[in-house]
Image (cartoon, helix red, strand yellow):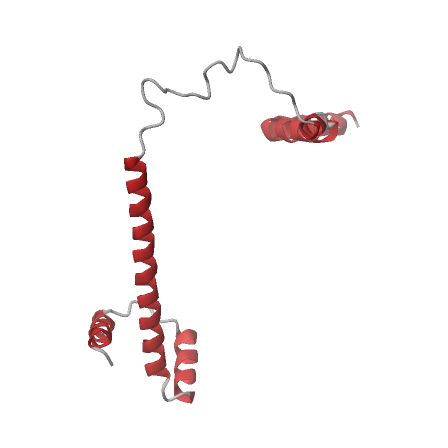
Length: 147
């Protein structure tokens, strides 16, 4: 065992001994005890596995932190794309400029009546579902009253 592993193990065991047991599920406790009794080295293997996972989590956190730091430093180095002079280049002249030609695919997808109709129907039903149910209930009441 290396010195780092010993330090990690001692820290883990200290945390284990300091952790209070709040609630112990009786069935889970029974199953765990049964399986540990079947494998004499189970305690050792479980602690070993927990430490491996803890080390991997630490590496992932460090990798994520490094990744975030690189992203932050890249953003800090690049000039602000929307400053005073270049407020939003995508808007300039867009309303009065020449309109680009639609591709044949855009024409087919934009003129498909079934998708437009379906989209509008779904939006209508989601907006007016309460009113529709009330109308159905009212019609039902009228039919029952007339009979």
